[in-house]
Image 1 (cartoon, rainbow, N blue to C red):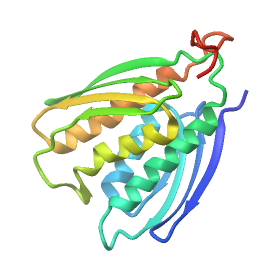
Image 2 (cartoon, rainbow, N blue to C red; image 1 turned 120 degrees about the horizontal axis):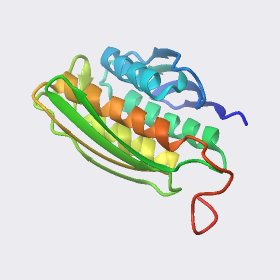
Image 3 (cartoon, rainbow, N blue to C red; image 1 turned 120 degrees about the vertical axis):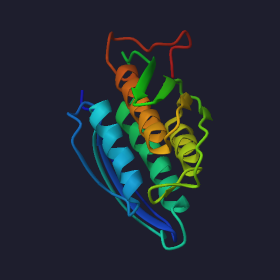
Image 4 (tube, rainbow, N blue to C red; image 1 turned 90 degrees about the vertical axis):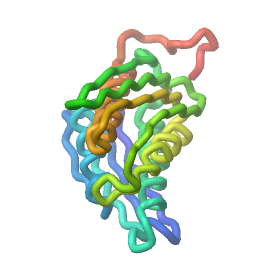
Length: 192
């Protein structure tokens, strides 16, 4: 069973291509034009062991919103395509990740339904060159197109550490949830 995808999306605001291998080694090639976002996606790839190639060109001269939102949407689509019928997956998982003075908790359910509940309070308007309030929207966009539930919280003093901890916790929980453990659909409905 290969769990790969190759998706693209072109709008008047962005032009994005993503390749994903759920059963990879954490190899990545990321270029979005937003350096801190690149760092978060690289961290996500490394800690989820998902091979990820993201090439995005967007209207970052305006701001980072369209690029990060559309990458979230397309990453969710890539995930949905790669996970397939979800036969045998663990389905639900969680992770608690500390990073220096910060700690993040993420729980996910690959349920076939979209929901995102994130409590992320950043102190500053920007984290590096990325707008801090777009972090929640990235996860909302991913959850919506991947059709998964994401719940996350983060505490700490440093916005960089908080953002990195939440991306790592998401990576660790997703890595665990996509593990193939048996040969059934993990739902009483028989479908996800």
